[in-house]
Length: 124
Image (cartoon, rainbow, N blue to C red; front, side, top):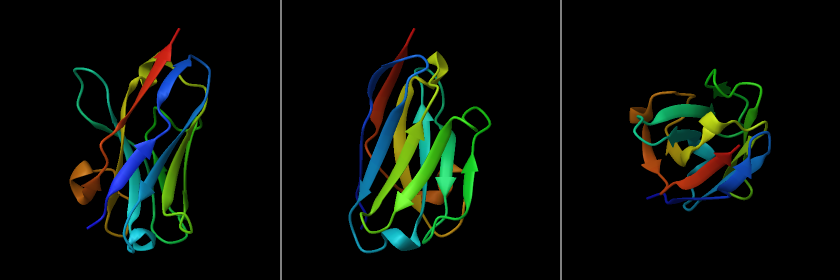
């Protein structure tokens, strides 16, 4: 079983930056692809970014965050990060970390492990 715990959310002004972290328990972290999803109020959960297993060479981003967000992983620390720059009001959401089988996927159904979420609020 894998447990994921997110941290790093908070309140930030538009144009600012935040870095989210997701710590994973268990010995299978390096073999899992990891991703970030988000869910804004009254909206469905949506894909944000994904990174492949092991060395994390494969990455994918939603168009809405491309060029502003960067996903990375540190296998020595069993942690995946989401660096968020140039934040916009529309980035306000609860951000979820997810882990799944090897590959880079945008579909939430392909991720079997989920964290509890961390809230990001962007103010004007």
